[in-house]
Length: 312
Image (tube, rainbow, N blue to C red; front, side, top):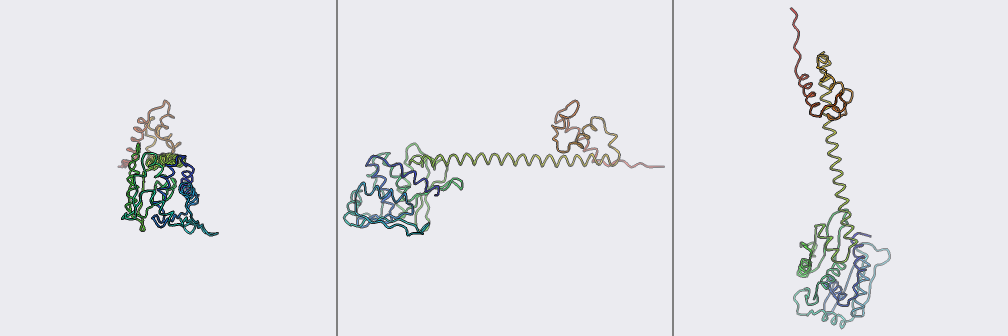
């Protein structure tokens, strides 16, 4: 079961007890059917919960005669589909007229007279998502979309979503494979829309997954920073060890002052320690800047070639 299917299943359980809201939800599903006209109503879906929900609403509200074609045994994916066909033209005409549509309509549009309040808008958007929506698993990304056959109908759905009160949702439109896609990419807007439709569990899953991702990113960033600091410390320590070995090789090590020699000896014994940690081991302890000052003197001495002795 995909995240999108789980979301649809959750929404299908949010059936309103108000007949008018059931009607708004069914209206969206009819508009997004394979065919919705005065002579033909055919609804097709690959999702079993969507299929059952449509049959329940259609039967409860209009009681038409219809036939169902289900998937053949062994079919899966896009081949696994359910089709509901209203068989009597008189039932098609009755349903089409009931929602205020006319054969003279040039293109299929949302009849806003069927959405008379905010709750009707909510039910309509829920029905639209159940019929043609999908949402990406938040582990993979943030994307919610409605796939619509008619451009003007898709624009109408975009407008209705943008009109949701107390939500600032930006819906974008694109064309893909002969269909029109209304989509939302922002994770917060997706969770707002899912919550608005009634899919609170799916919305919480997205928020929880996003929070976990942020923790992972922060942990990785911190780990990377620590690794970089360790590499930097190791490189600096190696350079310091080379300088000390240079002084020892040419005999100048024994000419170092006691304070320089004490730092050099600690560095030789503990090459992995930071300057602050070296300073804490000295007796008496000194600050990081104090250790750095002594190390710089050692490095400078090592960089200067010793004078050759001349014998006359």
